[in-house]
Length: 524
Image 1 (cartoon, helix red, strand yellow):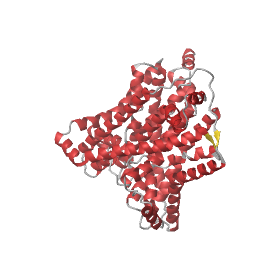
Image 2 (cartoon, rainbow, N blue to C red):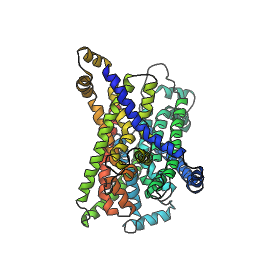
Image 3 (cartoon, rainbow, N blue to C red):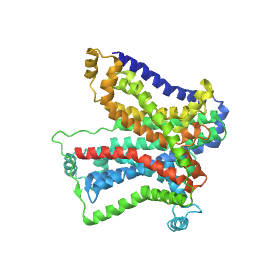
Image 4 (cartoon, rainbow, N blue to C red):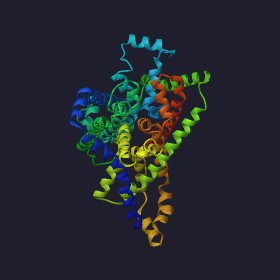
């Protein structure tokens, strides 16, 4: 069919568009003078590598602890408000890391009414400073644990009660049963969620920058914007890329080693145990404390500073311009990502073999690339191809396309997989051309997936910070840029309203997650 041939050509073109800027950054890093590598290693590389690995290990431990614990509680026990609490636990995902970092750092600022209380609590309980490894790790864990929680819960919800019978036969109880049976059965979901969480940690810029914890993303941004050293930034980017690909391969290796055998016989869904009165009280207090620190406290701080902004008449019409700027570049990026994702998704669904694998890997590449790396690759690419485009409004949506095309791609693959190719063949038999088949058959049937991908890319683009900071035109501020620049200058009241709007935007993907969780719960 002509449609399939055309989709292959377009898919290869889109894949080339994604891979070419990355090739420029790799070429730039490999051709730098060896003395630059020595200087970077002696001055920055050792510290950055150590900090990044420590952060990955710390956040990995915390998100696994939070995610697996809550997933196990919600799949094994029936308690007060269970259906409501499993929705509330997803709310921290709506807060961008740099917004939560801004909210918490403003609590101990000199003009904060909470400074005295924060200082007293920190001294009495000997808590580490927010501007430390544990402060950064805790905030990144709060916003990323839903990845592990959702996927571990999905794995545990498929638990067969036959495993309980086998565990009792072998005398496994309590913690031994949890470690040797429950945890092993949840490994696929845990590793998948942990991989996504750690990808977010490696690509985070705003949190580590605001809390002054140097990592690769922060160093790349400083190298290109402060020192005007694209070669040094390329070298750091290459190390970060190698670390990212190593993490991806490590996750796939361990997940491939894990095999769960299905026991023959009738499948029985594990019935949840009812919790006693004291257990209900304990779980309610535990849930209230956890969600208070991970969502309600930072949002409450934002509301406080927003009220101060309104009372001092700091809120002005500029916020409308920031919203319009944000919607302009984010909508353009989301639309382009959705359009560019279609030929790759169509080819992956309709074809098999090496071409399918190549396009799948290239189509999902961008989500594992940190924002500063994508921005730097585009700058190097445009410097050699079209220097006059640097600083133009066209570059920012292109960065969003490279970064978030995988989101639209996966959504469209899910929709196209349910559309039989027989419908296309029937249309071709009746004399319809490729465009008509796409317009009258494919597009209506895959519209929900196309729209979902568009919305998710739109929200991710709204929250994207480093790529926007590095590529935006002069004086072109988005909501994310205003939150960051005002927070860096400790202008808490000025940053509050844009930050709240970012949180509201972040609730959109949370709504999708809640809808999916509700459907899965009903299937049970």
